Amino acid sequence: MLGAGFRVIVGCKESQEVTKAFRQLGIEAYSCDLQQCSGGHPEWHLQMSVFDAIELIKPKLGIFHPPCTFMSRAGARWMFPTAGNICTERLKLAMDAKQFFMNCLNANIEFIAVENPLPLKVVGLPKETQVIQPYEYGHEYSKRTHLWLKNLPKLKPTDIKENYVPYLPSNTGGAKRGQKATYRNITQKQSSKTFSGIAKAMAEQWSVVLTACT
Image 1: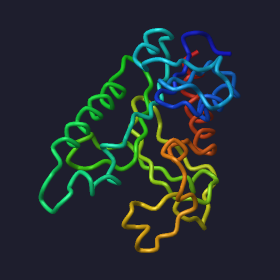
Image 2: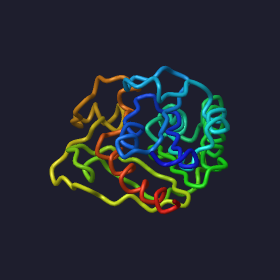
Image 3: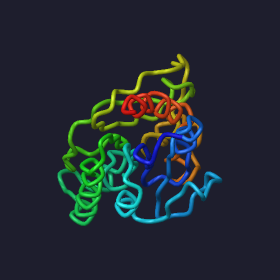
Image 4: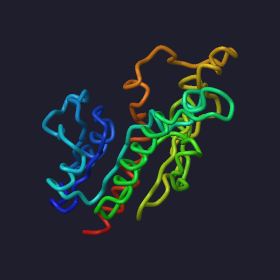
C-alpha cells in the first residue's frame, strides 16, 4: 500500500463501491457515513461525521457524495409547488445542504471530487467540472452525474455503450408520460449507489495522481 500520507476518504457513501476499487489497487481507502456500511468491509468504514474523519485520517484524496435531496432539480416540483412560488422551508433545507456541499468542496485536502446530480439553479452551486454518464463506463443506463474537481483530471470514458435506458425516471411527471426506467421501485439508498464502472475509473485514473506524488 501507499503510505499513510496517501489515504483516500469516500465521504457520505456507505456502499463502499469506490472504496473497494481503490483498495484493489493497493491504496488505503476508507468509506465514511453516519450509517453502517453495506459493502462488506466494516474494517474500512468510518461511521462518523465526514469532517471528523478527515481530521482523523488526514487523506490525500477526498471523494464526496453529499446529500442531494433538497438541491436536486428532480425535486423542482416541491421547491416550486405553484408557478412563481417557492417553498421557503424547502429552500432553507437546500441552502443548508449547499453549505455542507461547499464544506466538502473546500475541505483541507489536496485532491477533491464532489459528486451530485443536476442541481436547481436557485441553490447557486458553482459550475461543475464535468458531467458523466454510466453508459460511458460500461453500463447500459443513463443517470446524469455532475463532478466538481479540485486538482484532479476529468474522468475519461472507459467503455461507451451505444444502447442504454434511463436508470430512473427523471421525476414523477416522466413516469406519467410513460418514460421507461430500469429500476423504478428501488429505494433512495439503492438509487444513489455508485456504478462499478465509474468507481473503477475513479480508482484507476485518479490513483495515478496519487502515485505521481511518491
